[in-house]
Every structure is written in C-alpha cells, then in structure tokens.
Length: 386
Image (cartoon, rainbow, N blue to C red):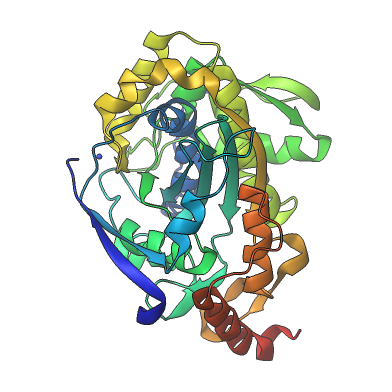
C-alpha cells in the first residue's frame, strides 16, 4: 500500500508470604502465566503517573523512530476543532500504549503485545479517551500481510506496531510507551489503592489470581519486586478499595466475559489510578515514575515527564471503548492464524472510531482503510460467514 501512505522520519534524543512450587511442571506453568500477564498489567502502573504528565510537554525529546500515516490524515486531524467554541487549538495528541509479554530489558521487538491501548488526548480541554484494540484482531500488520494485530510488535517493534494502527485506523500516532512487568503492585499501593466495584461472580477468580501471583518458581525467581506481598482475600462484593495485589488480580480475570470484559477491567483500573494520582503529592508521583521508568521504552523523555507531573490534575478520562466495536465484530478460527477477533467491516469500525474519538459524524475512511477492509472480508468470510 505504498501509494496510500507516506513515511516521515522523526529524530531526537532518547526512552500469605511467597510460596514455593515443588513440581517443575507447575513452575513452568506459573512462568507461562506470568509471561502472559506482563504487558497487560504493568502498563497500568505508568499510565496514571507518566502518560498524563507527558501530554503537558511542549518540547518532547524523542528516540529515533519512523512512522507511517495514511495520505491526508495528518491534515485532517490537525484541522479538527478541539475547543468549546469550535476552533482549533493545541490539537489532539494520540499515543500508542503497548504492554509486552517480555522480561525486563526486552521491550523493543521479538515479543507480542498483550495490551494495545490508544490514548487520545484533547490538549485544549484535558479530555482523554482510551481505546483498547483487542490483541487478536485480524488486521493488516503494517506490511501488507494479515494476522493477529499483536504480531506487528514482534515483527518490527514499535515502528511497525504504530504503522499497523495508523494504517488500519486512519490515525496519526507518532509517540508510544512500551512497558514490561514489575511495579504495578507497588505503584497502586503507593497511590493508596484504587476504588473498584467488585461483582460477586468475580471474587473467586480475583482471589485465585492473587494466590497464583504471590509465589515464586522453584529456581527462586521472584516475579514481583516486593517479596513480602501479603495475600488479603476479597470477601465481599460492591464498591471497595483494592490494594496493589488485589487490583492486579482484578485486571487478570478473563473467565467472565472473555477478553472484551478483561480489557474493560484494565481501563477501569487506569481511570481509578488517575483519580488517585490527582490526590497524592508530587514527591510520591515522582518516586513512582522514577521506579517504573527503567522498565519503560518510550519516545518521551523522563526529565520532561517529571518536570510536568504537577499538571496531572487537569486531565480526565471521559470515555473508554474497545475495538472492534460490538456491532461490527465477529470471530472464529481463521485458517492457520488461529482464533481471531474479526472486524466484519473495518470501514464501519473506523468510521465509528473517529466519531468516538473526535466527534466526527459520518467519517469516510481513506482508500487505504477501504482496501484493508476488503482484504479482511476476503480472508475471513470463508471461515466465519457474514
């Protein structure tokens, strides 16, 4: 799709007690579970104390990346009104948030993204909208091959993953944050916990995940920085303050409402972390950011982030959503690609996405998106029907 996109280079400067498992099989199984949760959990740790600070930066130092944007999209988004009187001000900042199933230090590529979140920030009103892109969504992965979208990061790191989002969704993302595991429990505890409305059918799963996360493998590798994390079971449903371990376990629940409900729980925790972050002092926010940054790969500079943490109170998450949208989504086993989430019409999904993010009614997707939509239909129709 070379004639439907352009390349632009952006250069700059850079981003109970623990228990032992006796059986090796159980240890391997535990490690596999931990690897699967790395990205989807740790990304929450930095959002409340890092992401919204960087949105206040006027001059952001960036690592060397190149980004792809569909033809005409930059100008279209730049001209969208962002102020209450309908004029264009500072504009929208769209950021890609990637959580990877990788151990510390392996954040650039060769790992799949368990979490893909688009944060769209209206820099004039302070309104923030979050969109979770389901990791198994069948899309053009950025190089005219089609697969689960979380494979884009594995193949080409953040550049290809951003290219995948821009190509399929008609966005102009240039900046990203990628996170590995470690730090979520301490971060939420430092914020004083998060307020969550726990449903009665979630309690047993929440507690099971807590138990599974406080142990260590037979080789003695601890999966969390704090070895002394205590397991406190949740015993009642309803609105309550969850500590770091409890909130982490809450984000892990996937047996109630599958992946769609799981991503909603993630967004709920993000929102609650933001609310808590508004009430803590700057030294606490700074300490959390400094502790998490070594496990973060980003196009944003830490010094710039820390210098603007005090502005966190001016931003508010006003809406969250999952992509593809319910009414334009299917699913099934797509040949050798396995079980996939299928946008039954990528064109309709992208049109609805732009209405959700930017308030644009009847948005007409680009020729690139239409071409991707046609290909997705051709590839998936024999397997799921329409």
